[in-house]
Image (cartoon, rainbow, N blue to C red):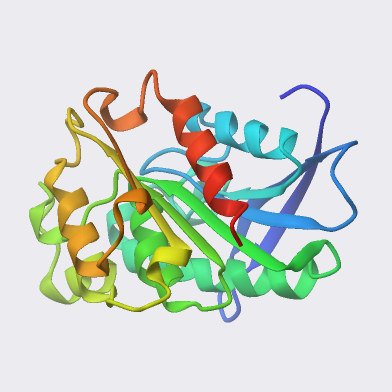
Length: 239
């Protein structure tokens, strides 16, 4: 990422000897106050993964502050927790609340009009449509290729875990959804079936303009990343 200012941060988890490793990105043209995006990675990805870095750079160039962090069992944070993400998946989801509170507390002087946005793919999208959905301090939720129900994964999680990580159990039909939520998926996604998009759209009662879909592109939106960025930027500018 050329000409980008990198501020490495540690986000403490109270009650645990653990810091989530993260980075805040900006550049010389970033306003003193600007909207703040938390960019959430997919499963087994981290803040240096290509997909994360691609959108981080795009949003920074568009005038946003961007924070990306490594989940438990991912990236640099893995050095503290080990790599068994499946044993800490509930905490991986709930940690976003701590990250949101950290941003609002320690970065409030940078956030324009409290405009806090969550953007993420795959498990990042599921975190957004569960814990992120519950947090009304978040103004915009952009979830890409997100699973609706974790009963459908190859790994068979215990029922109590499924209910803590499935958007199915968190989402509600609310009048604010169409002002707040944008979702996207590719029909040929070989990791999370396209049917999940329709399930989420129906549950949230989303309008057509809140749903972006492509015939091809797979799980990483190959060939459509610029389209995803443009749709996201257009949606964010409405707030």
